Image (cartoon, rainbow, N blue to C red; front, side, top):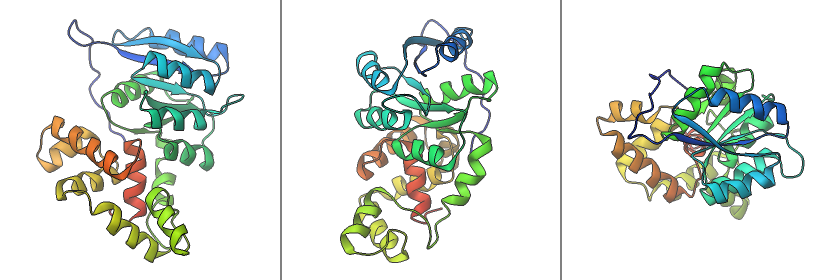
Length: 251
């Protein structure tokens, strides 16, 4: 789901990626800050020890990326991610020691733009921050295969958003083929053919650069289409769009 990209270099014309750290362990925040401060193109602008403070900090500081721990006292990382994604006050990279399904899927459904384990290499984390700030999504290799296997569209696939509401209102089970088909026809009917192509590509885990190459359009055009897809489907992140596409059988 992720591919290595050349590491960008900071220059006078490119502002640094502004990062907010949210973790309840001071030592982990300190370690992350030390690591991120080694990169000239990344700037730590704030820290939070729990989810509620992270939401407040995101609102006031407007970071490019929020590095969010999953499990914190009070408002946990997944709930905080949902609030930040809904308010569009930053892109969230979930960074946790837990690769349990409920954490992975909960984070992505909440609107996280990426998911990494704390065991990730430093360069992997730095690259993930840059990619998310550029509009791409990142998933830890350790959970990618499980994620794709879980969201292969079939009769037992879970659905959320428009499809879940449709199924509930109609009395059908959320995973039934009829509910998925009906929800797809209604929700995706607002998308243009090109936006549907972009949604399919998101479902396959392609980055913006890969989508631009495959569809032979500019990177700026890809970003415009992605934004339009998210707005029309009432989604908070490209990861939610990817899940939506796979659940609807578009990939």
